Length: 554
Ligand code: GLN
Image 1 (cartoon, rainbow, N blue to C red):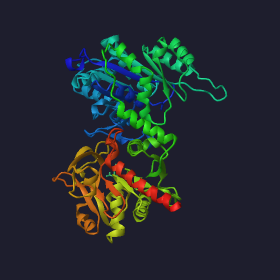
Image 2 (tube, helix red, strand yellow):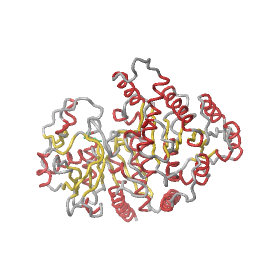
Image 3 (spheres, rainbow, N blue to C red):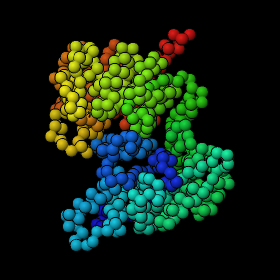
Image 4 (tube, rainbow, N blue to C red):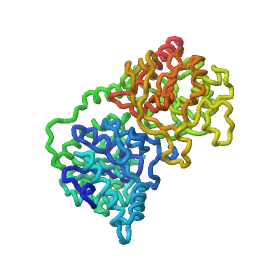
């Protein structure tokens, strides 16, 4: 290893592992710890065991949403939590997958870097992982590296990460690293008692691999009792105050506050010998969490918001959209009843009358496409507030072309790959991508500037600024040949890309309570403290519709 991939002698490492079962919220737990350390330069890293180079080629049903970073990286949805909790822009290289680890290793082997040695899982795979972590720590001048190891201890595919961080902990020494283990504390029906055995077993699994957690978080539907904390502490060989309740919460934003109450920050600072007098500034965060709690228990107004998509059976497929709605709702002091509607379910249109807002999120392919178009038409005609995102915008343009511009054969070129002829391709292939043949990494991705049209609604909701930066992930765009026809018939394109490629990025329909659609994904940059203006104004319009519905009922 050369100097930039060895330990810089300064950065502290916090490793987060998981036990017992997946889906306990390791990403949120890691992000919450990061939020409490926000006075420091915290760099989150996620280590995933799968062999895809990135999750961009995975179906969201498999793995939840693909999160897109400003630098164009397609990463695990946990980066959504990191960005929302840590208020940072993540980078592609902070996401490590076994696909990346092995690509690096094989590339180096072909380049002759290993000069005749036998390449082995240990030390070589573990070395790639360690040097990657050290390199990021140095490059980013990290005070704290927050490293989450995906999966559950004992999973074969994560063994090399566990072994690598064990070795790393030995290099940096006990004052510079800390292990947090998240487990599950069940209360079996009938027994009505918190049980520690699964935690004991997963801690033992970790111990067998040479790792002794400093903090154990027990996810449970009730606060952990002092009895169970003591029991876990005894088997985990830690003081019982280092056993933290990972209580089920109505909102993930409550979790940093709850960890803080349990004293996790003091334990971390003490173990890592970080001197700190001031606690993190969480006042506004706390105020918004309290608004959410109040609206959860006793809502001022409950807006019915529908998300009409194809992957509605797995809520994680649209994780950031759900969060963006929660952010806007907190600022408007309302509750949202988010209905995940499968566009292919037969009775979807009947439900529209009871809705206050409809979102058609991003998507791909022909399945469900016609259904989405007909929902968009119904929503436009019924004056229901509407936000279309990416594919949702493209299909809103198709719908408008068909029903308002006299182009009944309008469609998107995307379905041509399924062998369907599109006579009027109002949505066409991005010209500079035409040469692309392989799937992984072929989209127009990442952060781009969007120039807002003077006097447009979009400009108004973005507080009058003329350029915004938003994130994209698409292959198709509004076909330039149809722009004037669409505009002549009342559609307004209120956001454009830079002059050179002039891609349409926002569309709006002026005489509608709220009909805005964007080629970008506003949900990816929304945070609790700074909600996306698009979601905020969608819900504002939804609130007006709610008031009308209530008035009409009275
Ligand atoms: N399928 C569309 C495209 O490739 C939209 C993609 C999306 O919604 N993320 O352009």
